[in-house]
Length: 85
Image (cartoon, rainbow, N blue to C red; front, side, top):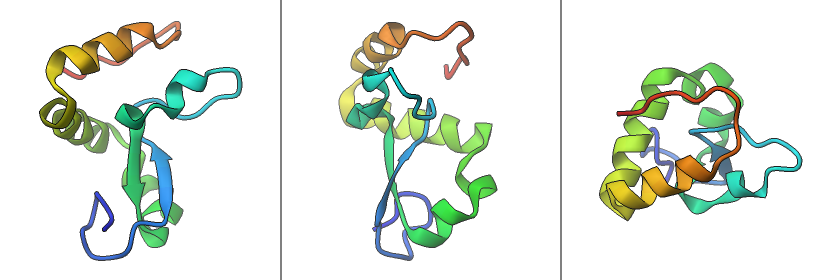
């Protein structure tokens, strides 16, 4: 099921916390991927905002543990990073 709406079948992997960029395979980590339905993924504004990223961060911390999430995010090579906590 779609991890955003829980109403449709999940058919896409959405880079939720940090969008996918060429040359950054660490972004394809399951800690960054939200499974979403076609409608939720097509409506980019729906799953591409700060509120969604904050909610997803919280979900992933429960799933993988806070330290695991912090460790993964610390290894993401970005000039500017959002603060999810």
